[in-house]
Image (cartoon, rainbow, N blue to C red; front, side, top):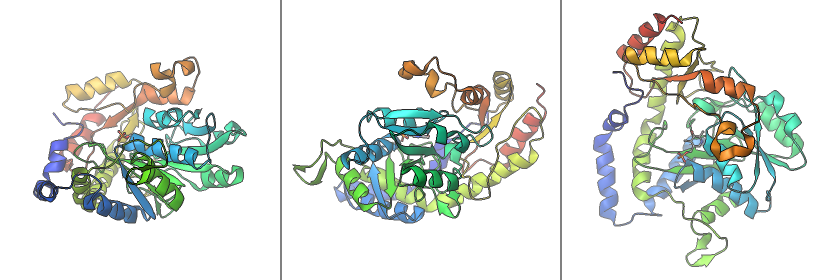
Length: 367
Ligand SMILES: *Cc1c(COP(=O)(O)O)cnc(C)c1O
């Protein structure tokens, strides 16, 4: 069986370094808010060319805390609206509604799977305060027009960069394009911890300070609480693991690009719609997502032939039980995407032999 992703093998590449880094933290006697997290924040902000980075407990918290901080700074208030793509992973939307703001779903473009720029403007109202872009599947959103719109209507731009560490739009890395950006280090992400983790990047000092306090019980100074904060921090062991893995991230991205280019150049089955690539550096290929009309048949064909695949994602947010109030609404493009997408195996270590085999199997498939 060719697995969708072999995480054990991903981390085994660095096991000597990881074990040394882990032992160093154990021996230090210091497990939260220490040197490893500080250093990782510096290294990750430098990687994105952003001024500030604040480690948090996970990617969802990164997005929640960005919005929460804008509320504390009186930029957002309850019932304000944030525009978000209707085909995103549920976390982007949860971050908005959990802050008592209103997610305004906008359909994606069927080719890029990114928010459809043409459909944003007529969703903007007097209550709209931000656009949340999602660099879905690892490709950076084309930001020029979105940044223009945000200027015109005085909107914040929040990036959900959970799937796109290292991707570029217009020579800028995600995490340094909008006003603030949330990243996830969930183990399966391109930069994955050995547990949960997340980070916010921004060039706004006041926002950075507010997020840092909010994630630490609302406190800048021990036992002095400015906000009703939460406990959301990146612990020392995870930061140490991430420091090791960040050094290898660009190399892994290069490998993913090789696999993706092989798929793009060699899958010749006309029943399969391949992903569209904006340019060479826009995509870090967290997922290689194809579309096909009879997805269930194609997926079981691949499985019978020893290829494991996954679906990102089977149910659109507006059809989820968690958002019953939207269940009767129609987002036709999202629904089509959710019915047709399938993610092929890809990783920083997938062998060329396996990739060849997968392509051969796909090219023999008949609808
Ligand atoms: C993974 C992910 C998140 C949430 O990250 P967690 O670390 O799992 O909380 C948010 N948005 C997107 C697009 C994601 O893929």
